[in-house]
Image (tube, rainbow, N blue to C red; front, top):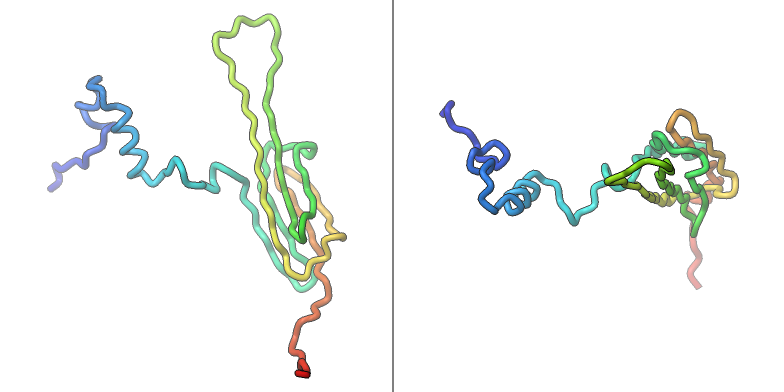
Length: 150
């Protein structure tokens, strides 16, 4: 039993030979590794957020390392707190003889619905890659009420 080695194309001598099935083996390895080409991965697609609730406010912390304040759009839409980031990386170096150049552009958006929130009194601060948003709560109108039937 100790001499058994699980099959993996990347460690297989046959796979190192150019036999024409490299793309097929790559597709199988990617499929069985749990990474989906068509699925949504929160790790790759967007930024992480933490939402904390106290008696008086909601506190939203978004991890945005390397993002500048000018690249963040924070707003309210249909009673939702919207945090969006639009970044484009472009270098303009003249006089160089490039064979290959790449640019990167990305946009990310998170919408957060917060119950009983005062969306007109929001305060936000960006510090060391962490966006902290404080959203005060409205007075609760909940509780138990009796409704008369006509």
